[in-house]
Length: 142
Image (cartoon, rainbow, N blue to C red):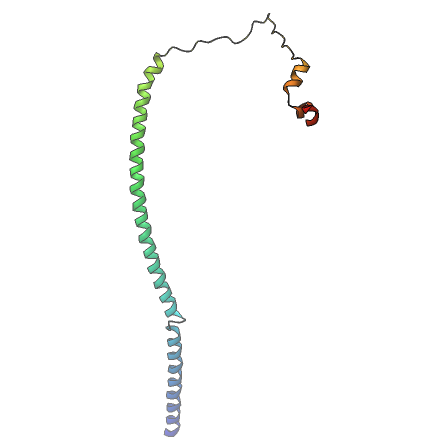
């Protein structure tokens, strides 16, 4: 009976050793940097580093833009103040100027407009170029 117990004990020890060997290989593959969780952790670490650099650059750009925007806002406020002062100074001048006289451009109803004189056809033809009058260049040259 002791012999059977020893055989079971030895076979159990070999089974446990084989199971430990399998777990060791799986754990090595899982923590391997080429593929697995180790690679995922390394990739995430690189992404976090890149994002923190990008964030720092964005903060610097925002600070620069904020400074420029503040400067432009101050300049716009100064210009607006100058323009409002000019408008206030120009308002009395505009009030003192006499209003333009309203002139009636309409003709009296009983007066008819004079008919336009039509130019003589020969005079008009001589003023027009040869190609407009329908003559060829030879006829015009003659």
